[in-house]
Image 1 (tube, one colour):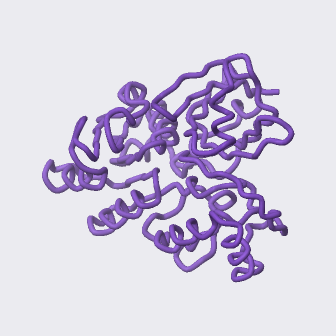
Image 2 (spheres, one colour; image 1 turned 135 degrees about the vertical axis):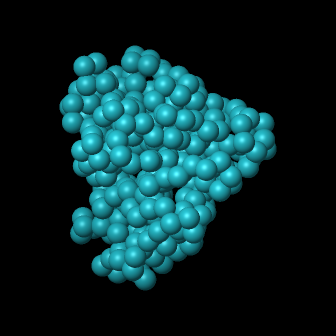
Length: 303
């Protein structure tokens, strides 16, 4: 059992929890994820690691209540436990494979949309620990949906806020703000890392391609099973079939076919749609496990 040591509400439907998970805390790196399960009959839910403390043996998760399973999670309190807490899974951020000297020479910008701020935070924090510092944009529809602002201020070189309704910071979306920073404020970047809703990442990549800035995206929002079994996170990257949970979650954003991914995600939401995808995609429907799911609908989260 994995005990919840801390619970905090970040916004109306977004929660943060510190979970006692010694083995995961000892080996995880930014960019990886865990699969949590409340009890024996509960659904497996993949969640990106938001933070970790190796000394305290804790892993921090952030989740949004979007269905029955995450609503049940939100009812758990400090002292309660998860039945399963499996990880770390997925590939670490590609930044973790670079030396501190290389990182210090790079001008990096993170772009976070909504709950995507949670997986951005550990990467920004890790960079600071390597002696490098990155700029960061956090975007949301309105001020009350901005999360982890104070935590991010401590780790980022510069923090910029964008809200669609103009209630806080820059009025407009994250792509508008990115364009303003580069075109009007003289900022220059060698690398952009974008994490958030698919539509947000698509338009960030369209802009960075125009600006000739290499861009990495995290495709964790499309993960369901987290093991390659369900086929939910199948995507086209540069003409090759990849799976976010086993091959990613990070990919070259300029190679991801976002339109196909968004269309596929909509089809996958129904049982009939999932059956059709299995029929159409055949052996490439799932990612390396050899089995398809039984058709049980599992929920996806902003993570």
